Length: 197
Ligand code: FE
Image 1 (cartoon, protein in one colour):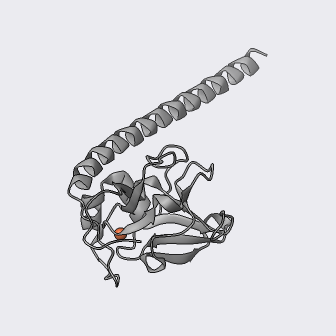
Image 2 (cartoon, rainbow, N blue to C red; image 1 turned 180 degrees about the horizontal axis):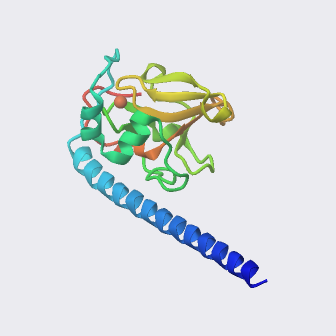
Image 3 (cartoon, rainbow, N blue to C red; image 1 turned 90 degrees about the vertical axis):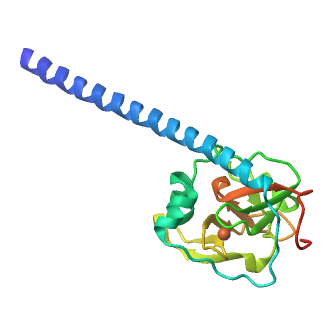
């Protein structure tokens, strides 16, 4: 009987240790994400001050090595934009953001979405009914995680944005579901080289 007790005690200790280490790992992950978002916000604020929006007639692809992207984007943004990662719902900068302006690609600055087409999807990710221009956002069939979805990316640099679904509101019936980290917001009044739509 006492052997049985000792056995059960040992397993309780193992279970406790596993739970504790899971808890610590999750806290650390949250701290890393928080620190990363603060860094991204500071970086983006500095960048946005210098922004001049351009709406090119034709999209010329930008190519960089993985090392260059890592250097440019930082760890978390690189993970989402170049490794097709997903930020956690309700954690990004823009899911609950209602200012008037443009959402440009965080990697190359191409204007991708307008606040005019933004709507509250309740998903915890910024959602739009359409891009600024059809040819600014590329699509690709995505069969990961046992689902068939349509992946969306910046047509200029290939940066992963999120997915597009056919359950959006009028006028398009589409829902462009985008990671906040893949976007950078530029207020409407910012000077533009070419007038956008
Ligand atoms: Fe881009």
